[in-house]
Length: 251
Image (cartoon, rainbow, N blue to C red; front, top):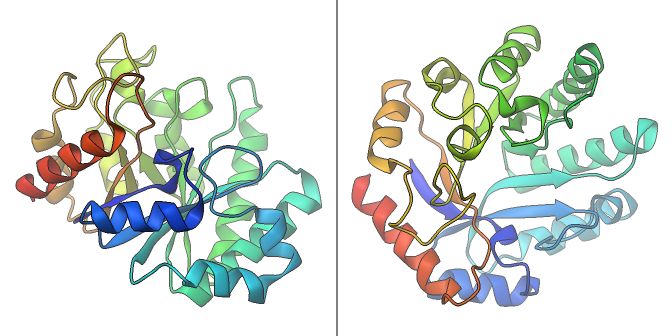
């Protein structure tokens, strides 16, 4: 396992500034966000689809930082959605990136509809040697431990981006996550409590040591990605550094 950080953790910084900040904080890799509209994006999926060669050049210029994963947020639908995702898969292959983090469908989405979407994404990614890791998220279909498990059982090759906060702060808090661990392909981390999605590092209830031990048991060897946004009144880079040092000390 190794510690990385997501560009989404720095919504107020541009691409070059994010890289310089991560290098100053001692990171050796980065999770690049390909967001169409959300803050913290490295570039837009529509830009990747429009100019793949340019995207490869831009996403490959990471100032010696390895790219640990691509986090993909596409706003389109139908063929446009699949076309942009296919372009992202080709980008991943060019960058030698395996993990593609994708959001889960919102609550209320028909189960079979989400299954079909995930099957299509997994098939496109497999053509380029990539793995789709759907995120566990509050207010999405993966907020309950049982649903992402069923997704992975029904969609061969699907993995999970485990966000422990989802099962600490969300409506299904307290449920054990052990049955999800064999399917984990990426991890998002911050500190949280049952009442607050994100708190100051060290003041939350996330048991990083226990989580790392659980992941080691299933031979997880991929990234632990710091995925936390600024908290008003706190020095954000100091919080990021604190969590990096804590995780490094546990590995």
